[in-house]
Amino acid sequence: KGKLSKFFSDQRRWSNERREEIRDTNAANERERLAIERTAREAAEAAAEEEREEIERLRQEAVEAAELAEWVRIEQVAREAAEQAAREEAERAARDAANISAAARISTLEAMFEERLVDEAKDIQEMEANIQESEAKLRKRKRSFRDT
Image (cartoon, rainbow, N blue to C red; front, side, top):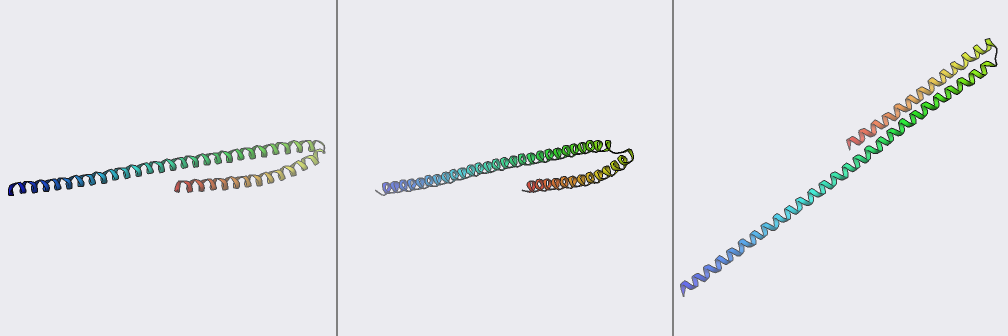
């Protein structure tokens, strides 16, 4: 009877130890599975964040390119308008000069051209100041965008 009892006792101990090993293994597997899931989720979230940042960067670059194109277009329109105004002014001055005597015509033309040169110089200075201000704003926005 003692040997049989010891045998069953050993079997129960072995069975209990085996169950404990299985539980420990299952718990370790579950921890590993959860760690893998967490890593995969974090990687997916990081990839999604990178994609959002890339989309935002591309959108911002497109906006900046559009703004730059608009400033270039405005500058071209302003330049063309100034050239057209200068041509019209010159044509008008020529018509007016034809109606005045030679001496008066020379004097009048000189005064008109001097005045026009002064006005054009002021206009050019204003346009250059506006362009520099616009370029400074664009650089500041680009710098701000790069810093973010």
